[in-house]
Image (cartoon, rainbow, N blue to C red):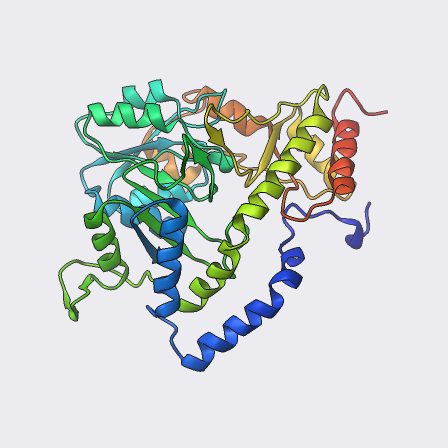
Length: 378
């Protein structure tokens, strides 16, 4: 077994701290000295900066990424009696957010070539009750948004991007979040753009959607009168301190995304011919940001244990698809109904990737993985 200090983590947030430390401490002092912790100037500035980064007119900071999807869906009319189409190969929060609106999630399969939504399956799933579609930019790779938008335009449906893993990813010269009616982001600490706690945002060009999300996040109030409540809202604000810290980290995002791309390139080179399924290449006109680097391997669980025993903290995203989770049995899907999703879940193995990972560490992962594969041990 490896010693604790020899373990290479899946994510290493501590490596970012030395670069952030001085500015972060100054930020804590600035926010605390003013005493503005909710709906303050730092939030307003972050919203403007992140909207500009994404290429949208509006950004509304909210409490977390799950809330971002939910409030965006509510803003476009999803609710009780309606349906929202998404994939089962995603973190469960995507589907939780749909259910939180009162709508019924309709789960479809992925395209095995992209690991994102199968457009043919999407087309077949749209019905009279469909209120919206939520494509997921899985692992930081943009979903096929041109095709998704075309299908949804024919049905006059809004599209909400689940961009929780795709901060700064691009397709056709535009960034995720700006590719549909609205985009929902998570700023959970391990994300490419991560806060120091829970945080999220909705970005959109639609003024009505932005206004509704702003109202819903703050008790359904209206800007001109905080004591007038026109909607039934909640307390789902992005706090001022997290917004200030996100402003610091946003300035570093593009450089760190480039670092992730270089890591992914080295993984591809070192694992070529190793007998593992590599992530799909970028689509034409697209640029992934590699929130995760996920390979597919035979006998995944055994390989995972061998990696961990050798000090490589690999992971699995996501071992049980949403449609096979106990909480979602009521949706009526069973094993075999979404074969591409189930195949991906059986073999998916996430390798360490984070800003600052060294070449020798990538090489160590690749060498260890080659030895851990069933037909390469010896």
